[in-house]
Image 1 (tube, each protein chain N blue to C red):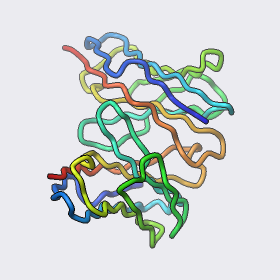
Image 2: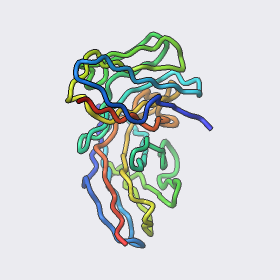
Image 3: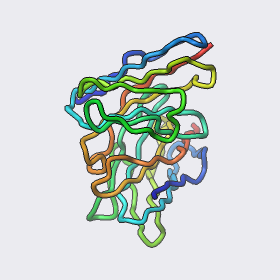
Image 4: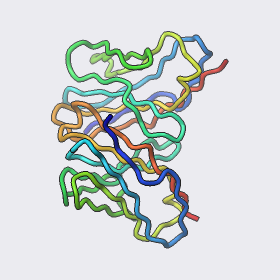
Length: 114
Length: 113
């Protein structure tokens, strides 16, 4: 069964900490995505990557960075966590033509910044 | 540019009643359309998709959706709601060769006993 695995289901961090959210997929997918999900706002794209070491900003990249050193792993980095980054973070992956089959999502990481 | 509008952030139905979740899209090219479901504290799971061909698409758990080009709609239906259908549902749009999906804001479905 194909999988996207996010390293933590729940995470609590302090304001100002550097936070790493990890995502690994075993489907050899080229595309990987990071979204945040907030009530009433749906899914908002933070960053996506279409190849190793390649990245593109999404709709809300401020306060975030990403790293993709290997095809299967896509990391989201909060350089200095703030309380307004408390949210559910979802990782997804897809083949190059995402429209053919849609995305495969991970189970999400619920991050609380205190 | 593409966009998706889901009418109704919350929908409540009785167990056994018809489920209708509305999705309208905007796209300058022929759309590819998706419905996803998210159960509490989980990721999103693909329910069904429309790419080309038959406009009535059947998905998992008894759900189906019909692509209506003239109405730019892709509404999700299920004839008889079950308690286990309570979840949040997202409509999404892309296009052929597209590498990203654009999601709607989501509709929370509540099923009353």
